[in-house]
Length: 326
Image (cartoon, rainbow, N blue to C red; front, side, top):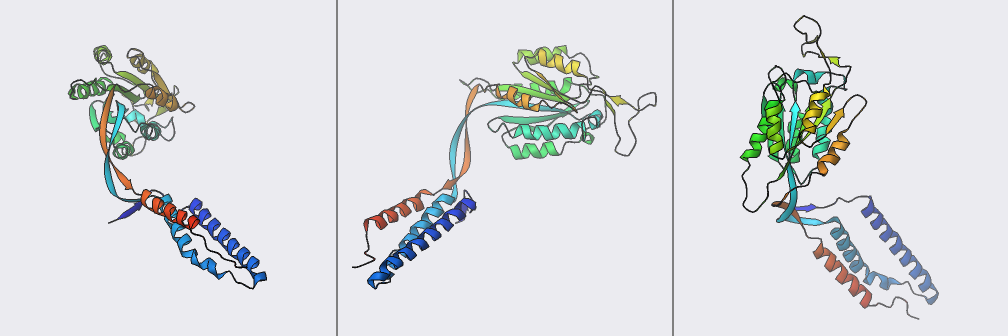
């Protein structure tokens, strides 16, 4: 049966062992010095040495937390569902936010995900169309893997449309099965984009988002000065007139999306990073439904060596040995 440990042998344990050795050696030398005038050597100290070494080792083992196997434990959480909608249009390759808009947003989203361990988070990517990259999940490692793999080349080139990702998030919300007697989970949507939108009127989908009680938080990535868009094969993306296309942050649409859904607008620019405020805003979205999840945890059995060690320590105290006989 495999044994795992809650902690590793570190500096604290090394200090404890060193202190025990130093103090015990000091005790031996002091006793031998006191026994010398009586013509004795204090050899009876050896009677308790194995006992003391044994219970000290047991106490040290209990401190390291030995675990054998796993147990299933129920974890009750009041969670929410958070959809991350990430723009993968070609303009997200612009380097006005170093190293690029997408790479900077990807790094910040990875840090954001680690702050919400009790919530389900899903990932939708979009450009001209929208696709579910990762369904709602508690598995942060899997979600971070998907985030780290995001590239603009994942989607076919086309004009950015903000309506499809919102519609897809709403469809996913409607497909979530309702549980009798349990209120629906709170839903928040985080839309990360440079704000360029070449789609049709957003008002119909905005009305649906508001009726569904979804809070939409938008993050504008880019700068007002903008930047050219590099191409993977070299050079820059050109417009219809053959000139280098310049992409700029367009915050107006993103602000309107947030305001009409009781959300907030944040920016990620070369000078400003408001992801910390976004995390705080998401924390204030309280989960509406208590859910019970069963998780596998290591079965820490530190109690057994701890109890045995304390029992032997008590025995050491109760049983006395006369070391020096006058």
